[in-house]
Image 1 (cartoon, rainbow, N blue to C red):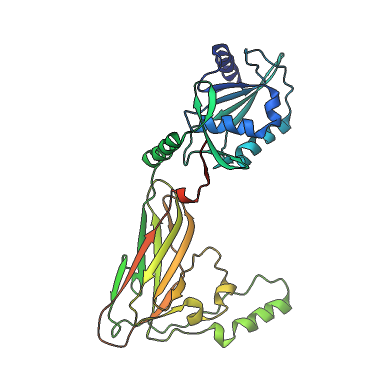
Image 2: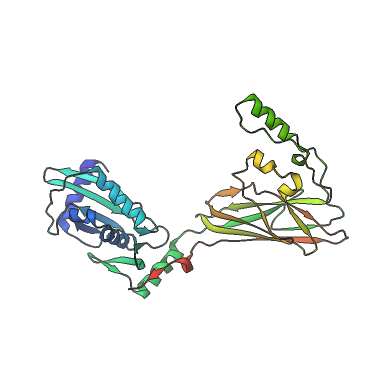
Length: 330
């Protein structure tokens, strides 16, 4: 929308008066973050709307002088006083009678929004042209509507065995599953800038404990996690369960204590041992249509008897952490 059309729209809104999606505010609201947050949250929890700052209740312009610091204040209120934070759209209509700040708030896209107060989180909705705190029943309906409307993630977990991607279960026969002896390459040198430091890096890279080879009876197992759904997944946990007579080793214990540090694996998500029979991993956020492919391996020593051993993997996710919310009913 160009500036002329937006200006025309705003004057039409002013002429029609306050309603469920339009609120007039004098410039004094710019020194009252809680009151501004209430209206933002009420719009977000209902049908969205516009806050017109610099407009009196009767629709006349107050004569607001535009100041770039005001936009920063409004955005800080949306971020710091609203939970989850809001991202409103901000624009300025400049007229001879004074400026109008237009703060457009969309309806919530994830969880309902609340105002952060000293007493906890307080949820508001828009009723007519007023902002009202929700009743317990109204708040329950808000959260129920989230579950119905929000797009969902869909996670796929695959174990990676010695022969590649094998699904969420892998069955092995220890007598036949062996990994080949391969020469472990020395890790690349650190990004150093002097000949002396480069020589030191070469010497460190030649240390025997950095070139360890996994023994033949250790089987490498990793995992691959994909989100093929339509929304991010939060608080993802992956669990691997091994037979009780297996013995697990973390990758650094098998291939060298400092290799991970030297090769710089900050982008990988590690598998960590809970005990000798279980391993787990955690991903805080996994975006939709994304895949975590570089889970670090763990190594397994299966029992030395002729029987099949099944390794099981499962994944959980938490997209609605309602139990962690400090709800304030009024």
